[in-house]
Amino acid sequence: MNKQTRLLCVSLFAIPFVSFAEPIEPEMITIPAGSFEMGSAKYKTSQPVHTVTLPEFSLGKYEVTVSEFRQFITATNYPAPQECRHEMDGWFLLWTKGDWETNALNTSEYQPVVCINWETANAYANWLAKETGKPYRLPTEAEWEYAARAGTATDYFFGDDPDRTLVCEYANTGDIGGENILQRDSNTSYYNWSGKLANCNDHAAYASIVGMYKPNQFGLHDMLSNVLEFLADCYENDYSNTPRDGSAHQSEDCNRHATRGGSWHWSHWPLTMRSSQSKTFSGGVDGFRLALDGAAPKLSKTTKTHIAQLQFAQNQERKRRDMQRPIPDPVSNLQLFNNTDSVTLTWDYPEHNFLVSYRVYRNSLTGKMFKLIATNIKNKQFTDANISPNKYEYTVVAVKHHMQSYYAEPVETTSRVINLPGTFEAEWANKMSQSNVSFAEYDNRNGLSVAGAQHSQDKATLEYQINVPSDGQYRIDYHVSAPDSIEAFEIYSEDKLIGTSKMEKTGDAKVWRTQFASNLELKKGLQTLKFKALNNDWKIDWFNVQKL
Image 1 (cartoon, rainbow, N blue to C red):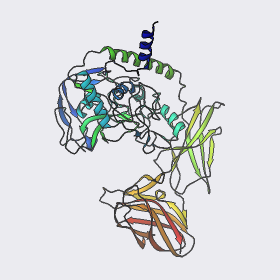
Image 2 (image 1 turned 60 degrees about the vertical axis):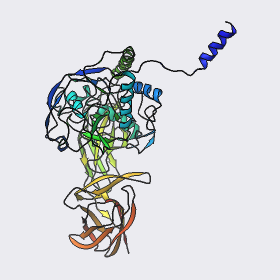
Image 3 (image 1 turned 90 degrees about the horizontal axis):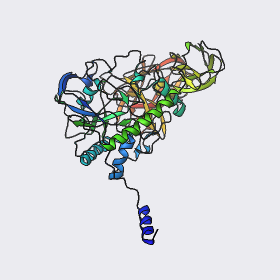
Image 4 (image 1 turned 45 degrees about the horizontal axis):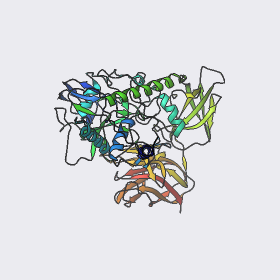
């Protein structure tokens, strides 16, 4: 090799790698022209049901993958979001560092791209359209529903599935298999989050490699659930002003866009249900697929190569899933016994061998998500001495080969008396009306709070069973969030008015302050302390009662 040749080789290897390959175009499915009844009488946001007539169009067979999206970022250096709701520790944490490539949930180049927002998805579609000369775009809401339902009138394109046992063949959703991993990794749950847990195993804990489940009648994959999909339409609360020709609804003030489908983190819902997302929000369950006017184009060489690589990844994933152990049978006859200072659970299970153990789960409030409190239990009995005064639930699962069963039917505690003086949580109410329990996010705390039902004409009430040690004057303070200063509550003991309270403005909904509520004259003994709201625009985290 002469000197000139050597210098040429050195200079070539010194040049950064640049890919001159054509962009990967999505594999598209032609959706025939037709009319359908869009919406459902079951949901207010899906009304009025109306006829939509669409021309022929094509839709991505799969959601856009990390591999495809990588080309866009490499080519444009687009400023994609660098923070995302993707890490979990009992629940999705607030904004943390993470992007489309590096986040807590990605495990494959062939998963749908997440940790993007609507603006980023739309920018990708515009870039691909410019690069290919084909007008790729985000689908409209009408196109999505028409294509997802594929001529069917049932809840899902494969039927109604009331027992939630068939969905795992068609979608990646909140299921028993995913629950195993979710509880193991972050002590959080699908159960009681957004609906009923699927009573089957879809073999994916987080977003799945695309195309792993059976397609619908048009040949589209993952339409029911895998990741939530961004759409072109500006979102409105119903269909009163939406187009009837299948085009996207647009408005001048468009801060939220329609989204459709479910995600691995939620229980699935019928295809007519709607949702929306802020155009700047980026999360670990949000992705998209593309649409195109007219028939599906021929596959390019680059697309064929991508399909071959995807098929290899799918085959490898199928082999991994085939090796998974079966889900064990659930426990039965779960019973709860209230003791003076503890709760005892008992249950039945048909198997009796060293391979089977049990886990006990408990929630903070009836109907809320379960968290693991005990594991590797060998006896069919458990006593919990760390009890709480409010109503809450327990459930138990059987575990075999590190796989846990479906949850046993939950059992509920009875309300216990709150002994004063002291602090008690707002959600410990024995009874509550026109109010709801939500998260209280402040100072890195992610507990529960009670909020007034702001859209209700009726005012909230909260009732607590208390035990007062002696007659006298008591001071009550509460930890609150209030957007305005208000007359807050009338306070009753056994239906006798004993005080009133005010709330001073705290400002933002996430700003909390400890405030004086009222001085109360309380009699010794057991009684009901009732708070009748005069205004529902408030949140309460806890109460503190001290004798003066």
